[in-house]
Image 1 (spheres, one colour):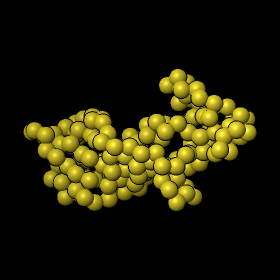
Image 2 (cartoon, one colour):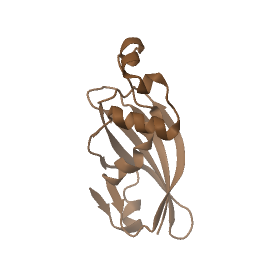
Image 3 (cartoon, one colour):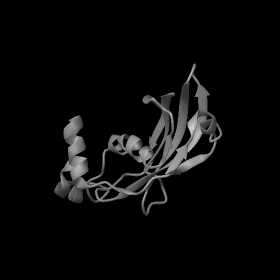
Length: 152
């Protein structure tokens, strides 16, 4: 894991890759739990037998938003910035879901610090380009520009 020592060192990482997370398996249980948490019970995600019969993907797939929701967890395994009092999800500039994530597949995240913008005393807006890679696939599952406001 990359440990960045404060705001000055953080600024030196602008435009550079911060690292790649470990692989995480997207189990059917995780997909079902996400469906329960969000109320999105579309059959293509949770009805294993029907998805095997009727889905063009040959089985159930993860919700795109499930894939996206893994960003904080995956980030925590890639880098940390010392001295940060709080990190706040500031939103997304863009998100594209480029390949379905089948139940049982593994994903990981590649983080590039696209930009860092001062937002007042001890505050910085980070724009990370995050590529969610899908094991065994030429296409990534997702590419997103994720924004975080960090407070020192």
